Image (cartoon, rainbow, N blue to C red; front, top):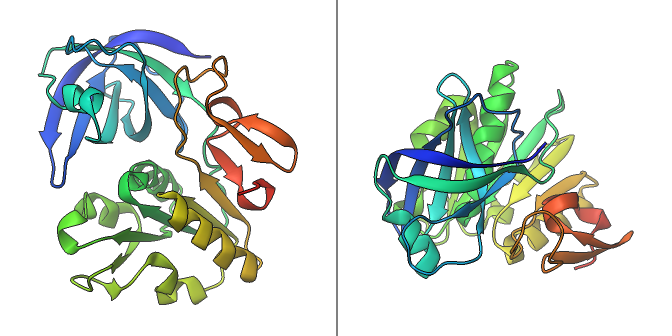
Length: 251
């Protein structure tokens, strides 16, 4: 079931490189939200925004009925969102999409850019099962690494930086952790990164699941602006994704 409610801002923390960490509280008990699902939010900043923005769920605290979001400022709307204050209300539709399946398999999680957001909640859910999975994050420089302490709580953190300032120098596909055997690979990030990961996974015959970052206006499959081409025909990312088996996608 989907909900459209006003949630209250309880925390808004500016982070490096135009990111911020937003915490929203529901007055009612939250429904089950799965790793990889997302919300559609409408800024309360009064800047003329008419369309909602899709934001991956970064974490959930059911005890406090709070949803945490890691958001990158990329335009006027997300900038307006970054300016909300504690006590402000934001209209949110949630939970949306189909996320990652949490199993007992050995999994490698890979995130880049704002695509690291769903990996925190995913790692946390595995940790609840007593499973500490490997998590590989690719960033430009060490200054671009976000929430490292949180990731370290729940996963074995591996890092690549393009300039070599932290971890292994290069893109995520050069990291030696990819030489390990996994039952599944879960990935979210920039499109070129996900394509490269999908190819590496195919070469190693490892099932790979990608969380696509498509533009979405409605989040419920009505506007059809997030349609992607798959082996089974056109599919809406917002309702049948955002997580897809890589081999089923036609890039």
